[in-house]
Image (cartoon, rainbow, N blue to C red; front, side, top):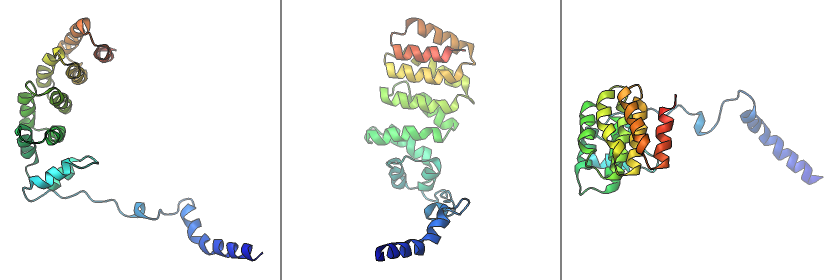
Length: 198
């Protein structure tokens, strides 16, 4: 009996606050109740080391985070990519960040570096080109179509994905049909078939 009274007292003492958090329409408590976190302000200094830290983040990165790390972000990214002494991981991360800066300069950089890049970098460059498909379809087409015949399966697959964003072009459709007729890899064949499907 004493235990029942003790437990009842403890429950009734904590009930009002507990009930408030569960009541419909009651305001949330804890971290979710605070105001939304403001976007970081663009950096006022040139700081490649802070930018590098953002690229190494386990949770990925956004343009706002990169812009808050340093000024001249695209220039730093392109310099790292061209620096063969830089770590492969940073170079890959830098290529992944390029689509966040869809400028004419970045587009020209991608177009110039993609043909002679390593296989894994070609995949990343092709993925970066997707952001340009709506605004520069002819330019993207000229870069992507030759890679439909790449000896590397993963590069052909990536090229098909980009070409799939350009299917309003009759030239792209014809080239995909031609590739389908000779493509030996079943995965690439399926990707082409999906792209050409009405």
